[in-house]
Image (tube, rainbow, N blue to C red):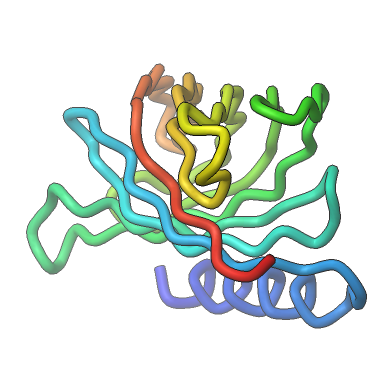
Length: 141
C-alpha cells in the first residue's frame, strides 16, 4: 500500500510543479455513501487535478485518490469534464470520473456545484459505480 501511495503522491507533485502560468486552487466536497473531500489545482482553463480523500471511513481505511481532468465543455456558467486517476488502500485501482460543474450564482463564480459519476475499477476485480453531488470553492481570481 505505501509503495502505491508514494507513486501516486510523486506523480501528483510532479504534475503540479510542471506547469506554470494560469493556476487556481480549490477545495471540494462530494456527498454520497462514499463521500470525499478534495483539494484541486487548475493548471489552465481546460486541465485540472485533484487529490481526494474518502471521508466516510475509519482511519485505517482512509483512501487517497488522485485525478487528472479535462474540461470537454468550458462554458461561462458550466463545465463538463472527463478524467482519469487512481486510488490506493480501501480501493486500489483506477478511476474514470465524468461530471458537470455549474455556477448557480453568476455574481459569485468562485462557488460551484457539481454532479459526478465515477466508475472505480478495483484491482481485486470489483467495479464500483460511484455517483456524487457536491460543492466546490475556487480561490484566486
